[in-house]
Every structure is written in C-alpha cells, then in structure tokens.
Length: 172
Image (cartoon, rainbow, N blue to C red):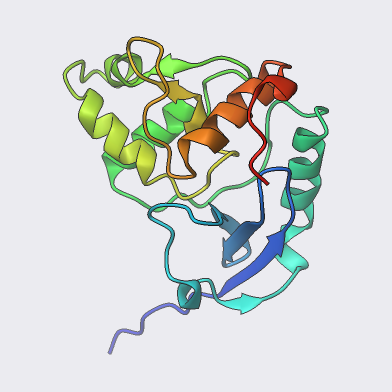
C-alpha cells in the first residue's frame, strides 16, 4: 500500500506599498505570493493555516525591496508548474532589477523563438509575483501588456525599480 506524502501549507498576509500580499509556504518553503485582486489567484482555502514561522526571511527581504535597499531576492522557492512554466520562471529571475525583457526575448532564451504567447501564459501563471519578477516582461513594442496584478500595479513596480515611483499613479 502506497501512502501519499502529507503536504503542509501555511500563509500570512503582509502590507506593502502595492496592497496586501498573501505569502504561502508549502512544507516551509515559499510557494506563493499573491496580490489582492490578482488574476489566477488560487482560492483562499488552498493557502493552509495562518502562521508566521516560515515567512520571516521572505517578509524581511520584501520590506528591504520596498524600501529600495534590496534589488535581488535570495530565498528558497517552491515553484510548481509544468517544465515549460518553470523554465519561463527561471528566466524571469535572471532579468536584472530595473530592466525589462519582451515575451519574444524570453521565448528566444528558452530556444523557442515562436513561443511568445506561451511565455505570456506561463508568465501570467507565476505563483510568486514580485520575487519572481513577472512585472519586468513587456510587449515587443515596449508597451505594458497584461499583468496578473493589474497594469497600474505593473507600471508602479517598474517605475519604482527605475527610481521614478512618484511618476506612477498611486492606487492604494
């Protein structure tokens, strides 16, 4: 008889300049960062029990990021998705702070130059926003296209990383 391994999930909610962020850990490893009103946000009942224990370092690094003191996160992450999605997400963390890449550029880096739409779909399913910086992906023309957290939030995050936060509209 085979037994299914038990998975423990916990979550907490932290404040940010971009609204409340829900952090989710699976077996003590960060597996989700969801914004209020985010598209593709899983149902709350899948987030597990409330708790603070696994989130101390993630919260510390997020606070440092929002204070302009951290430009690269260093956290263990549990990214669950298809091999293609995980490949896209791995490319996202390679985009330097304050820079952007197009969906087509990411598709090319993955060896699939015609897969910019598939890259966009994988980008939209990113379970750990901000830390896995899907906001840094733009259209080929430089336009802001799609963002699970909303285009205004994407614009604000990009402006913040470029040191021009005051130029972006304030939503919260």
